Image (cartoon, rainbow, N blue to C red; front, top):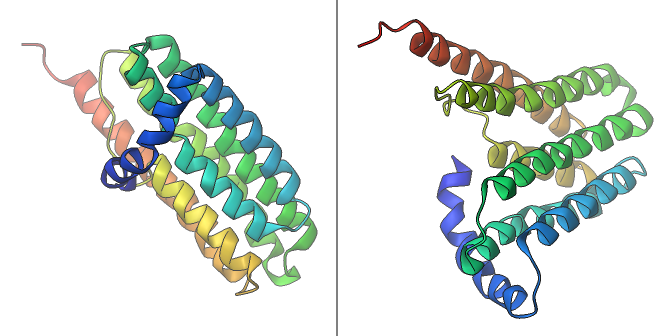
Amino acid sequence: MLSRSGRPFVQAVFGPVAKLFVRIGVSADAVTITGTVAGVALALWLFPTDHLTAGALSLGALVLFDSLDGQIARLTGTSSRWGAFLDSTLDRISDAAIFVGLLAWADAHAEPRYHALLLVGTLGALVTGSVVPYARARAEGLGMTANVGIAERADRLVVILFSALFVGMELGDVILVVAVWYLFLAGLVTTVQRMVVVRRQATAPEE
């Protein structure tokens, strides 16, 4: 939902930055790779060391910059299947790093009463966050579609980063508990939705 409604705004804001990068010769692939390396490093450094506020803010900025590679590719006419594959694959790595970082934070710094809930919920959100895009990619690889569900990437990132920010502001670990369990369950629901949609297509009578 947010990925569709927020895209025009983000493109308008970062369009001038993309044009600047094009002028100085920065490629779309370079932006994709640099953003991923920076995101993974920040997530695995700031979250485990109990710097949730700094981690959430810096990673949020990188998420906004995530649209730059696509804009650069369009401006330079270099959009390609390789670029789309690279971007999608590295997005999975970036997302996983966020949840691994939070998993490490939960194990070392969470309130004892929420410790187990955070570990299970964060691990569940990590797993379903990988299964959801895989289900869509596998369906498309088989010539079908599976672009349904309530747990799109942008929505997941907004939920997890804002909850980490609020916990970092000492508003209570329970916020992160609710967030990771929501993402875990939303991921399960989305996975089932995509399985149902694909099964209908796979078993539909051929015309």
